Length: 105
Length: 277
Image (cartoon, rainbow over all chains, first blue to last red; front, side, top):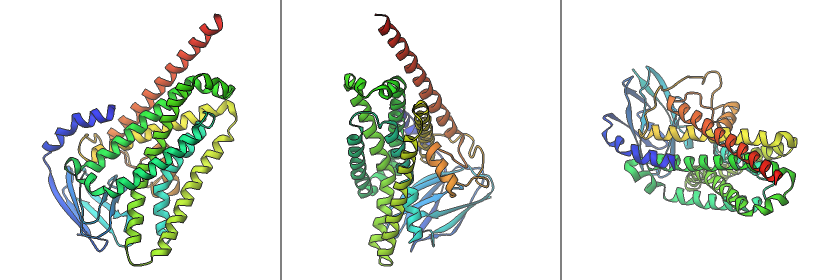
């Protein structure tokens, strides 16, 4: 109950978060672009558009994020603020091809 | 095939370890087996439903339905694990002494069993829905269908085996250590889940991350390795946690620990007055 009420209380804050958006596209189990540059030190709104038929799980240990993106679906998540550096990510369901990196600078 | 086995193993492991630990912790509660099986079935049905409605859930709450669902499921599981540990703190000794003692306390035993059902069901629902989506994707694709599905089966069996191993191992713990061992494990499980819930809320920008990451031990103990993965599933280890995750982790530890102390003291006081009459 504690968490639910917390969620409800904090929910309106999400609407006011000013942030820059970046987009990744999944096609044929690959990320486009495979390397995405973002500014360091800022919170980033990342949109992932899956153009494949099947679901994918965006997964990154470096960014400490995971999110399922359904087939022909779009998912949004927040990352950062990041220190300058390279942050690899992958599509867990198709690791052989779905690899990418976010470069914060 | 190995790739598939590893992915399914990773998804199944956490739920399997949770079930193994709570199954061991409640093995002397009458009827717990049936409730556990019911929780497993309900969880599987729930996982299939979540996978089927993944689109609708994902677009709910301006695209953060997945995070809200995960955080809510984790939050309820934390509360149920807390309830279990506090209940065990006052009833554990009786359960060990004789199963008959609990017969008198049947209503209490039943609520403990409903907590068990929820814990198992929610663990399976959360981890299972991703497995369902993954395996569905394989089944729907053209190439290498049967060998990959076989891989899925291998991963599932390995995950279940790990859960059974911790269950069987815990039952071998001598009785005087048993309640201490299981309640510490459940306490750490709950704290780890609270930290994960915080991570989902940060991902949806519903909570500030505070310092992120608070530390980075990924070079020393990566979560992609076996040790890191086990520690992540059991005690909520995170190689790059946000400060807010630690706040949730420690709050859960302190709150549940205090609840257990309180229940133990109350129970002792009650049995003392009972003996005096």
